[in-house]
Length: 161
Image (cartoon, rainbow, N blue to C red; front, side, top):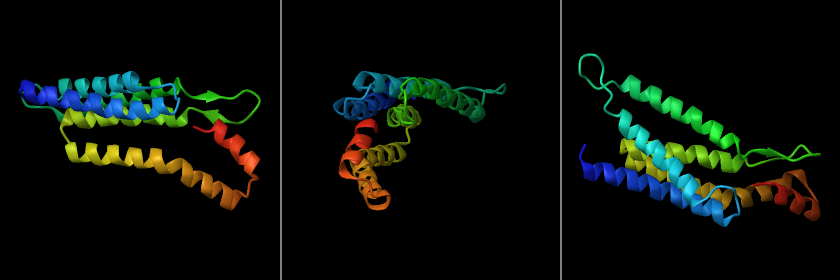
């Protein structure tokens, strides 16, 4: 793989992470452009580094790359867990969407590192579909099936992410 291809993949991963981080930042969440840009860049760089792992015969070893990716996804889970908070005195848990955005950002970085552009593009599009339409759909479903009064629903919305 040439330097131009490496630059393209790393840059794409920073852009993907930065775009997701921008959305999180604009919604007042604890992660932003730099955090998620770095998560995606790190995942991409590690994927690129492990792409050329060789077995004892000088052949590329996909199993080695797979183990690196598995370790990366597990490690990112620990980073994401740092933003999950349980409110004192209630059963409310906050930060799950931010933690999930850290996880999917790492996965998108891996996809950029692998050069699987269609999967990365479609996944990024679906992330934004969820960000834009997920909360309004959840609110509508809560109002319809849980039949909560408007004030109670607003209190729930303030605690959700």
